[in-house]
Length: 273
Ligand code: GLU
Image (tube, rainbow, N blue to C red):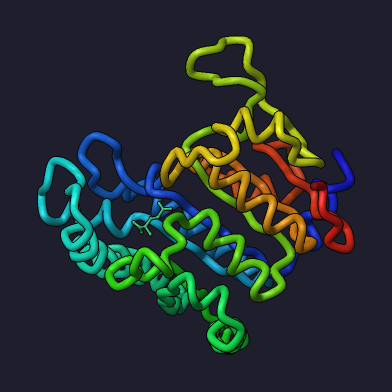
């Protein structure tokens, strides 16, 4: 077991981010209740074990699409904002139900880019999050898509989760996604592509694998996950990208077992650039 993975056991404050691809069926965009239930149960169990969990969840727009019976994502901003507002409630209803089944209380926090950048707003968000954690409650965070304007929009929850992790001095950031981790090629087209266990430096070559610097593949892509790993590791927070479809993945990861890809923290926040 690598030293970086062995250290994961000692993590106490853990940010867990889950993407839409893990939460909803791609064909119908309806929620994947099997996955959500297992995920919440695992989070509740980690919480029982004494960990502080901060849960960053996407899926509001997808849940809105599912609830309204639409076949595809609208191409205009106001409709997507409306669907985020509809879907956020749908999502929280499900989370609240599953968390309550395991005796857990959750709290919803909707942040905008400004809350992670502006010093005063950031301090307010941090204080609120720390108070929630102190109460033994699990914060569930999303971007406030219904009101976020272009200027203040982060746009993807990978970056949001990294900003939240740095805001509250998390020990580790775990990103659950629909792929096993970071590969050294495209596993969909290259059968020789293999999973990279550990990435200690985010080099231009790694960024190229993830879609190339400056290329935004959109939410859910590997590029934004690498950006998130960069932000978090620089702040001394080890980051992991692990498969969201595997039952027990979180526990395995925190036990230091080999799963997904780990980006060990830069000790003392040393930049790799
Ligand atoms: N905040 C968006 C949502 O809840 C998702 C952003 C993302 O996929 O990263 O639908």
